[in-house]
Length: 352
Image 1 (cartoon, rainbow, N blue to C red):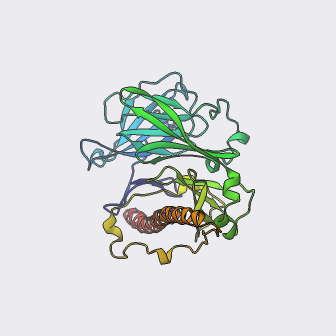
Image 2 (cartoon, helix red, strand yellow; image 1 turned 45 degrees about the horizontal axis):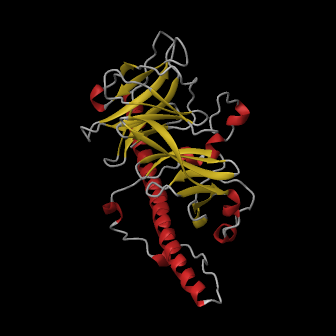
Image 3 (cartoon, rainbow, N blue to C red; image 1 turned 90 degrees about the horizontal axis):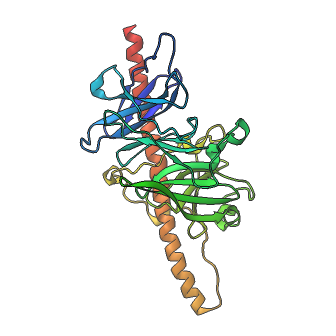
């Protein structure tokens, strides 16, 4: 489920399971002629009622950009937004909207890439807003236009293996996971790091026609393996295993990526397996042909290399299947949603 914005500013709630796009009513002003600045908007499912989905919007109040309120909308609320005052944590800095929104552990998480995350439970009457700063050394307390330029290409927050993960590119690729439970304060844990030179020196990277020394744009984290990162460079999507420090696969995209931030427009969806039963599983013969074998004069080295190749081939297949699902399902869903949006807009024009 995603919230999509049309060029005219109208927002739509798109459900991939039911294949329905529903127009979200405009967010009402707090005072006459005063439109509340929308910080972030996202979707979260009720843990008690799986079919009950809420669209939650974080907005600034009139008193200060540091004080916010939550506005919630569901199918059952019609054209009305429910306003929920937030119990603010006063230690959080003035918030922005660089990074998007996630739903995790029945909470909605608002991301600001220079600063960190704000989260709350939108299903209770008086949600408490909690601030999670970025890992040590990553926080930008006084972000300016220059330092925030293209930040979405160097930083990314995704959910992988049922954990919130944060990736940062700064001479090396580093990945942290957020340790969080209802009874303990959130805490970042560094999981993996690898120099970008490991990407540039990889054989698959070179044979893909990419430019060594150029920092790629982070696109997403594999939802089933947080050690596998996806990057985009020159309209080529490639995956990198930060654990083994190897590029697993690459694929040319039939889309322009130079004008957008891949991490904000490409989403990894875990879809039901029955959606791919008609086409069957991806065969190894259909994988990208990348020569991964290394010659060895030693029998022991050959045996070790074969084991490594088998592990790498398995990882490459998993990565390729995930990439295929991400691309094909994303394109199919968006094409369907576009047709739905056109139908909704056509009905509106006919009523006027």
